[in-house]
Image 1 (tube, rainbow, N blue to C red):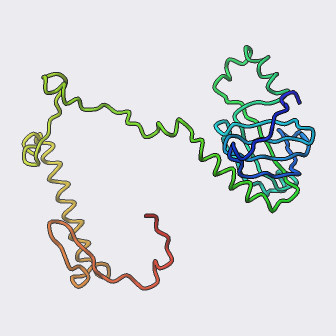
Image 2 (tube, one colour; image 1 turned 90 degrees about the vertical axis):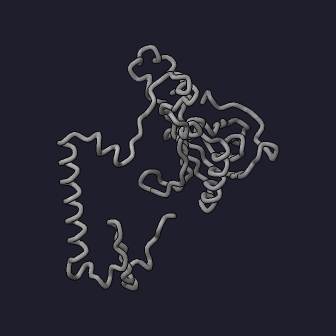
Image 3 (tube, rainbow, N blue to C red; image 1 turned 180 degrees about the horizontal axis):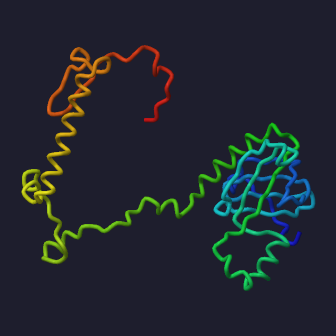
Length: 237
């Protein structure tokens, strides 16, 4: 294919993590031949016996995984999805670019399958890919923690500019309620009080012996947990 080119394989200077010989490369279902896969910190490369091959930049790789589903492909392999087009498909996409304005938001996708003759090497290949991919984080992910909301400009408010937010204490808040609002609040407080009272006195669920503390609307159930009920539960901390 036209995108195959000759270049020196990555070495230790480029952070070579895994070199897997006798590995078949398949692009979108078309075999490219058998060669050597180089998993380096700088890039992912594959070269055939004549020295022709290709390299993939990690920022363009959207997914990589070990595929063992023989229904999807007859041999176990390292699956790599890339946000780019290669070979004849890349030429077709450029030629049809003006005719596909409606599909501008759809990213091009290519699927690579790297099939080693020794399938026991797949785990090491996958681990090396994970380690190298982690060295090239997505810039969009780094900006995901940025705060997009409006910030309170202290200097502007000290100069009398902008709207100053109003804060009330509980008592001040009550004084600003309308008659309808006060009636609604009283009704909700009554419902809450009845709910707590019914839980406190319900037979078989909560008893005066099992509830040790009840103060300011907060109750603490100190009944021992039934042994074995949650012993094997996994909890995320």
